Amino acid sequence: MHRAGYFRLSEKKSSMKASTHLEAIRRSVNVMMLISIFVTCYFARDLILPVLLGFLIALTLSPLSRGMARLGVPHWVSGVGLISIVAVLIALIVFFGAGTVGNWMSSADQMAAELQYKMGDLFRQLESVREAGENVADMADGDDDPGTQEVVVQQPTMLNSAFDALGTLGTTVAVSLVLAVFLLSSGNLFYIKLVQSFETMSGKKRALQMVYDIERQVSNYLLTIALINAGLGLTIGIALTLLGLPYGWIWGIVAFLFNFLPYLGAVAGVVLVGAFSIITFDDIGFALLSPLIYFTCTTIEGNFVTPSLLGRSLKMNTVAVFLTVVLWAWLWGIPGALVAVPFLVVFKVVAENIDSLSIVSNFLSGSTEKSEMRELRQAPAAFDDTGSVADD
Image (cartoon, rainbow, N blue to C red; front, side):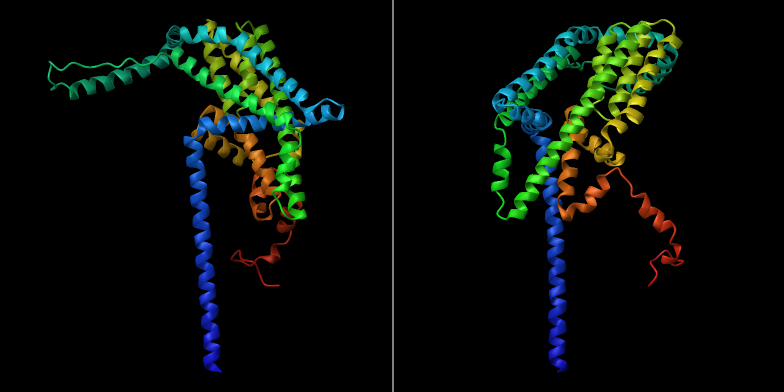
């Protein structure tokens, strides 16, 4: 009897050790898979980014396409029409803004010199520090062979780099729009194929519900943000024009585009407007009114307009949003930062529909259960003096 009990206890311990080892192996595989995904995204940006943008555009416009289908408009007609409107809007932005931005880039050195002149005190201090560093470097290199010739590699100009970036961006946008046309023209084909890939009826229903939730929330988010940004750009453009800042409409377009980048876009806009205003106006005090107006408008938009229009259903954890923007900006630069929040919305909806990811979805949500926190504060007897849960 004792020997049989001993064997049963040994088998139970062996089973527990085996399950522990399997769980450790499973976690290690998950970590390795996550690292592999990020490595793949880093090196395959030029391939993944257009596909991701195409899906986001299609998700944004799919409710409009489905509504037009109810009116008898074929999916391919609505798809081509909606994407054509998007393409025309992008072309208008490029047409009206490319010339002015190109002139600014070609005269960037002159503008930088004028900014340096107007902010002379600060820059003179920085220049003295730089000259001291160069003197130290010259003293360290003083024993070099005087016959040694220095080879200087000419770096590409800012304008050439901008043209290269615009070429890459144009290709990415073109591929994304074409993919969005095919996705919208296919109608419900993608949803049907997704449902057919599951065997059980519960799996089919859950997959279909998840896809519809992703479509609804992403479309609601992107359409609402686009309208908010358009209003913000119009307000800033009119305000800066009335203030007398040249090319106020350009800064309205900048505000519209930059505001798709959470947090960092507003800061970058304030800095750029401030620098251009200092170059334009002689009075520094009057020049600071332009960035102050930009900052005020973005603050009102971020703290009052956007939360009231998006509502609680799309409220996100600000810490999660910021970390996601930083992560994707590190992976893909500015394009990654722009698609970070829509990607986070998609991941949040997926986590809400998978039971094992409920903790993740709860962390990503911006809403707080105040009633639960109130119950915890009103029940101190449930905890002992050490902070651990007391026995019932």
